Length: 339
Image (cartoon, rainbow, N blue to C red):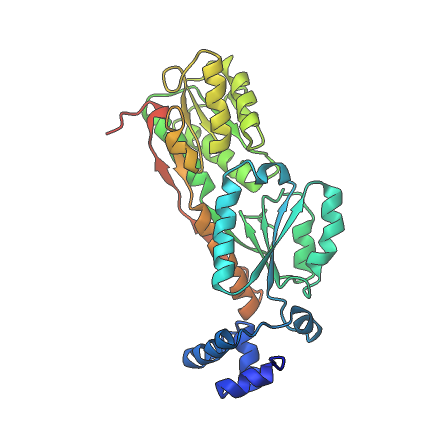
């Protein structure tokens, strides 16, 4: 069988070569009925564009790069990342893109792989997750006009598109609920303060205390790393300061915090009420079931891909922003009466 080309697909579909090219590259300026006819021919013939040829022709590679820098140790142990990647992979499949995963364990690895991300013959665009505020990668991508979407808002000075949840509001609601239950010495185990998610959830905690005119106690605020081990060690520190409740800025850290309480002969909510953030799958079956702030993790992944495709089709300016609401899910760990 002769090799299929754009010209042959165009002849079979009764359209021009340029129309087939626009369909293959997911260009918006194609009538729906024409797109369906061309796509039907592509599906029936099994035509697959040659990525190398497309790159040489200055066209798109059909590849989206997902970059998770310096979070390699959490990728396969923290349920947050599989749920996020499910959404990203689902959206890539829906829109006929290939997903390429870039994992940076160290700063040196990031510097080594960054040039590939800056060459748009390699990837059409980039999705970034878990990026520290001081990471130079995002500035390099912006400077080189690589279409980029961040999962989690960047520092305010960066003109880049992002999807996020209302982390400040979600943390505020969790801590305010503990205050409503009568807690007053509320501790917090927060994420790294060189990430916006860590800063925002910490700010929500502080805002909730301030709204009740309760001064923040530095001894009750522990910075950790979003890991179960980090939550365990942080709760061990907090116990000696006798909080009556603790806001933990991720469910994974909350799991470690609950283990620290059990090993100390204490319980939640009997001795210390505990609230997490994420509503990961294990939260409902934790011991005790964990009160937490739900965020739509999979939806963020889908939204990031769709936003990136919009940038590819319609240009980089102005940056797009999407912020999803959170929801407090009340379970037994906070001491509330569950109906």
